[in-house]
Each structure stands twice: as C-alpha cells, then as structure tokens.
Length: 304
Image (cartoon, rainbow, N blue to C red; front, side, top):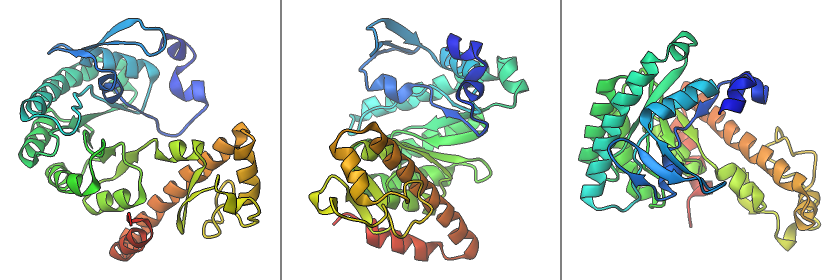
C-alpha cells in the first residue's frame, strides 16, 4: 500500500479515471482460515507466510491510502452452511466492526475531504431473521451504500433468493445496494429484480482463463474440437465484443498453443458481455419490459 500511495494512489497508479471499489479483504482473509477475535483477524500471507493482523480501523487506513472511491468495511463472512451460533457471532462481530470502521472513516480527514464513500455489509447466512437484523444494525450506523455479503458462496441459487429479497427489502432505496460476488446471468437478473444495483465477480475472468465465453446463445467452451474450423465471430449476437474481429477457430488456436493473448481476449469479451447485459437491464427497466428480458435470460441461461 505504501508503494501505491507514493505513486499517487490507485487511480494514477493504474491510469484509470473511472470509479474504483476496493474490498476490505474480509472474504479473502476468511478463506485463509484466520484466527479471529473481537478485535480483528490474524492470518498468514499467501505470498511469504508472514503474519498480519487486520482490524476494521486498519482496513480503513489501507483503503483510504489506496484512494478507492468506494471502500468496504471489514466484516465476518462465515461459510455456508454454518451452525447457528457461528452465524450469530458473525452478525454481531460484523455490526461491531461496522461501527468501528465508520468512526475510523469519518475521522480520516483525507477520506471525507476527497469525497470517498464507505459501504456497510449485511451478513446473516440463510437466516431471514438474522438478515433483517443485520441490515437494521448496519443502517443504524449509516453508510453511503450497503452490501449484501455471505451469499452465493457455494449454495444453490434457490437457497439465497429469499435471504437476498429479505435483505434488499430492508435496505434504503435511495442508497446503492451491492451484491458481493455474483456474476452469472440468471443470478444477475434475479438480483436486479429484487432491487440490487451493483455487482462484482471473478466469473468473467475465471471462465476466460479456461476457454469459456458468455454468448447470446449461452456458455461456450472454445477448447472443444468442434470450434477448430469455426469461422464465426465469438458471439454473432454481440457485434460490439472487443474480440469480434477474430474467429472462434483462431481464438481456439490461441488457447491450444498456450498463447497468453487468448485469456486476455476472452476476458475482455466476457467483461464486455456482462456490462452489455447490465446496460440492457437498465434500458428494459426504463422501458417497462424488464420481466420480458428476465424471461429471455432465464430461458437461455437456466441450468438444465
């Protein structure tokens, strides 16, 4: 963080003038099986094995130094399923850490002077009552926006739809509502239908690295032999794709020979395809035809 800050923060470091959102590291830390107490979490670095303690205050300090426009509070993200006592403790610690993080953020003059934003995170597993309680406690602290955490972490879509609906319904309609870690097309339209505005996910890049692309006709794996002589563009129904100038056969060739450009081109396509889906949802809402688009996406992308 010191290096990035010394080089002007993330925007200058990356030469990116759009908005930037950074996570607190909560999800990443808890995937490393840390030692957690009421103060924070102790974990080992995946890079050099060194030990680190991350607290709500330190997460604010780091993200403010990076200069992200939207920073997330440090939360406790329990795995699913978890025993009720584990989920309860996660809700309580997330609420306590949210208060500490908000105090640290408001005390950080550079953050408030630069107009940076901080989002609170709602936990509660699949328990509707805990979800509503966590939402109420997070709203009571007061943030520029609110995130739904701890869902779509391995459970089936049917399991998280009701907890999501209970959470989104409890959050202020005049603040951004953010679903953390969701990127499949059906999941996106179902979340938007329940009032979610903002998403992030590794899905477009993870799929691309393995040769899989998102298309108007569904998911395609270009490593398949059937595409070796395919002269069609990556998605005939999406002419604006950054990879539309190359044939499926050529892109498959790049994958087969291990050319790094393959993963990059497919990533650019997948990200553009999802951004286009979001844009189409926005237009459909404005035109009063969101239900029609929702049905179209579900028909193509629902699991068999």
